[in-house]
Amino acid sequence: MEVFLADIEKKAYHMAAFATGSHADALDLLQDSMIKLVTNYQQRPSQEWKPLFYKILQNRIRDWHRHQKVKNVIFFWKNTNTSDDNQDWPDTLESAGNDKPDDNISKSQQQADALRHLKQLSDKQQQCFMLRSWEGLSVAQTADIMGCSEGSIKTHYFRAVNKLKSLMEADHDISF
Amino acid sequence: MTSPSDQQSSNNQVNSEASQAVSQEINRALDSSAANMSAKTSAELAHIRQQALKHLNRETTRAKPALFDSSWFKPFFQLAMPVAAVALVVVSLQPSSDKAIPALPLAMTTSQMPAEDLALLQDLEFVTWLAENEQEISL
Image (tube, rainbow over all chains, first blue to last red; front, side, top):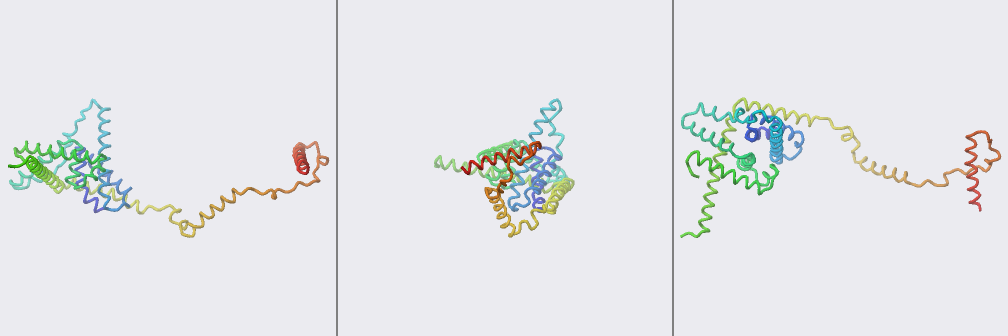
């Protein structure tokens, strides 16, 4: 179990961070998901852990969004747009690029742009893209994790890729 | 000259390759971001992993209830307990035999009972009723 959690934690953190836009909230969601997996599903075969873990994480993310919505309704007079001041993630590309040679800086910048494009997708498109493309889960597994039909997953993924393509083409003035 | 279907399939292929290129580009960026995570974030992730694994140890070392790990679930008891339960149900549902009721002594007649005692009076009524029933049966 420890090896599995160590293997999955970085990707899961990124998914939570993209969904919430907050480092602290992402860590909270990740910890809750890990504890639930360990407490309730440690007896399951290890090949089931990955889809189970991502399903728990997606449910936590969905709950987080619901809470945020309720919080925004109740405290409507407060400035709820916290996405800008919580940008302590990903804190790696900038720091990684600082001590690299010039030719790598442009590559880091390109990767930072790619992440920025990913952030412009809708929540479902982001999560669908990361589960399908980055984590390599099947359409059926992704549908089960996100709680929607396989057709919806295909649509989300198709739209996500198309939007990313158009954003990257517009940004770098290139065509794929 | 290419047919429209050929042109469409080649367009699909180009789109598919472009989509793949976009996906690979984003995946590379995500991999790089995950690989170059700051030491602070990595330490925090390790901390929450350890916190979660404490629950693993807690679950495995938690004592099982005495009922489930004692001799109650040995094969002998697995057979004996259902048999005993069935026997108990059968005995409890068996109609009680009339022979178990002792016969009423004929000496207890209404003339010999004291009339002033209320409790004895109730007994007297009961015995009278029994005597009447006995007479009806004998007729």
